[in-house]
Length: 215
Image (cartoon, rainbow, N blue to C red):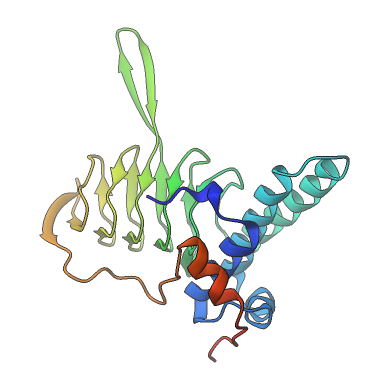
């Protein structure tokens, strides 16, 4: 899984834009902001996190403004994606309605999430007290409509089928299906529409050439 904090605000926004249509320049970002409610949510999430990393007197008012905008974009898209969530570059959300993500979940690079997906915590009641686990999606993971991942890691480039309930860790390149979710096949070709170049230099280079989002 990529380490999200090592990417700059500009790099993560560019990578997200690539996932939504193949463009990474300013024109593509502006077009997506104007016409794609799912992209707006990821954009305001990135903006909140960038503001939170700032120092100086502008940090607090800017973070407050970004958080209000993020609350509005989530409401408009009917999803719950907290700004605190650690998300790698190149997130793509399809349809978005009913998406719910725990703030402590971790999402890798080039991940695809469909409508109705839930990434929630798992609580184990042990003699010594409650132990909480949070979901972690590796790079290139594809999660289908209404799938649920509860407090476990999903390896890189896995495919989680629609309506699957995952309660056990899954290794890299596994197709997971059913309730409870089980490994049913091996992924031979990862499902990553418009993969973003997530290497530090690759993302920077892609941003240097503005491109329009295809209609």
